[in-house]
Length: 184
Image (cartoon, rainbow, N blue to C red; front, side, top):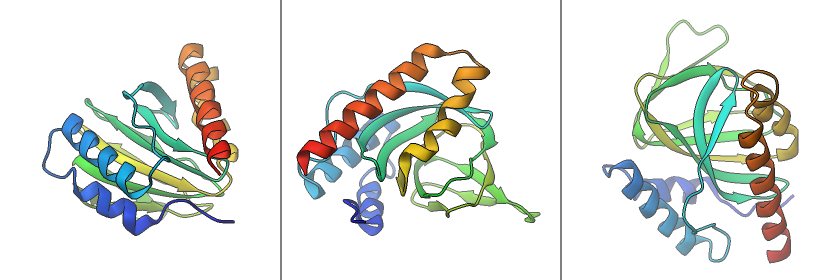
């Protein structure tokens, strides 16, 4: 299975946003990604979607989606905490503003992620995470992305009953998957 994105290239793109306010950071990262991956990145105005998953609430905006990869911005200006989810995919998060705390089963000390650092969640693993104040990050996942949707949408469906965000997520994901499919 071929992937569009290279993890080291994504990390280099994130470095263009370090030290900037969140909006300027996202603009810089998006521009760098569009340069590195011509025609692949959604460079239109960001369309934020509230996201409730694993007890945590933040917001996302999609940059790229296919059946085996996604790239998005995730964050919150007020903090949150919850369960990461357990997937058959690899998930990478690069913090470019704020900080995120994480732990995995058996750990008694947290791991701190600050601007410029990369968090990794391997296949079939899960972690607890907390954003104590605010954090913004670039998130990338590779593997069977549709298998992640039940976790990513369950809280909106059965807890918050936020059917608007659920519908918006599905519509945008479907649109981006179609775009990536036709670009091949």
